[in-house]
Image (tube, rainbow, N blue to C red; front, side, top):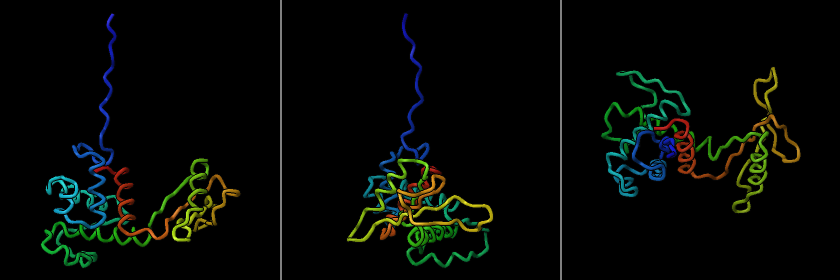
Length: 204
């Protein structure tokens, strides 16, 4: 008797760009170029994609930041927005309908460079996370510790702000969250890491 095999569902090639023919590797290169503030033409050359495809990805990145980014934005047609002035000479000629998106991009570049850096959250109840935090807190760059590793204690009723203390692998609360921030991370790398993580949660 012939055996019947059940066809498996096709594997999604790109977790960050649904219904796209662009591979995740190629998308990563496009996002890296975007994070480095490269224009559409240069990005198309570097990634061997059409300028039309690159421009579409760039605009969808801006829309994703607007809808799911670090700051909530609400725009109203025909009403000047306070963030409009941050669109500089680089964006001259941009259609009026797109200027808000460029402003959203600019604000996210500033925020990721100044606040996020290489920010990462780990669960103290996971032994693998503890091992990672312990390893990173010993890494040095130029004689200076590369990572700041902080333990954020579990919230206590009545407290308005969470308590933090320096992380120690010898004494920590399993209910805590381990916060890791990479020092001296260049702004472009910080912006790329933020975008790449954002796309995993909110694919294009």
